[in-house]
Amino acid sequence: MGLKKLHNLVGAIKDTTSITKAALTSPSSAAASAHLAVLRATSHLPTTSPPSPHHLSALLSCGRSSRLTASSLVSALSSRLFSTQDPSVALKSLLCLHLLLSRGSFILKDQIFPALLRHPASGRNPLALSSFRSAISYSLSSWVRWFARVLELMLVTPSSDDPDHLTVLQNQDVMSELESLVAVVEEISHVPEGPASTVGNQLKLEVARQAEEDWVQVSAGITVRVREMKERVGLLSYSDSVELLCVLKRIEEVAASQPSDWEWMAFDERLLSEVGKLKGKVEELVVRKEEQERRVRRETIRESARLVNPVRSEMVRTVRFGSTRWVAT
Image (cartoon, rainbow, N blue to C red; front, side):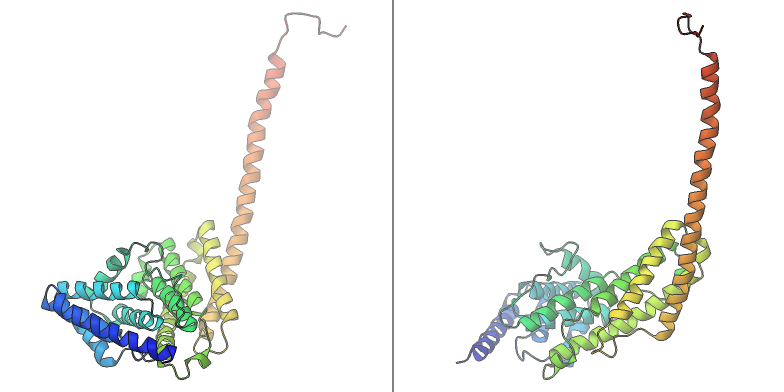
């Protein structure tokens, strides 16, 4: 029996055992249904196929019931993700997590971040998959690490792109949101392999399709915030100007270094044009504020010298020695 067939057989046995255990040991019917929905959506077989639409719909339906069921679902999914060493199961689990983040109910989304943070290895990287490696498939393992990092960044991206929402935010808040969105497109551009690797592997193809949707969504958010900062250029402080300039340069760097193999991985030309114009204005603002800072510094030094020198001269005039030994004769 070949290694691949043996691996598939072991995976099938594990799936059957896990499903039986979940059905028998779950504390309630709601927990059992949530756990079974996760296991069926993230089965070991087939290794190159994504979760079926039927199983994904079952996941979403769990979020439309009670908070207890939603909590059981998220807990089962996070446990599945953190415990598996199979890259196919891990990638399917990440796809399920992406589904809950993008289309899940508020109850489901509200449960995700706390469930991830409960894992001992979580912290600045809630999914804790940066070191995921499996001898089963080094190629799939690289996709797991990459897509996990994309999802970690998506967890902290702003939820609203409404221009009216942005108008009430402080400059620093808008730039913070812009920076978080730029970090997402930077990470997406680091896709481990080209489109050729997805031929015959629908699982990789589905992950790439989800990344494409994220790219489009995040690019729209970047566009809205670039336009908002364009209206605020005259109100920026020196530190805010420098920070914004760095973020705009990062956008241009992503556009310049994007992989040519993935046609969808490109910014809209209008966005790049607006970024270029805003960058020019901010650069002029930074130069002007630096000159103002130098002028203020020179004036401060000059004023300090003017105040100190009279005191010194007065001290020289009023010092008297009791002895005439130092008086020239």
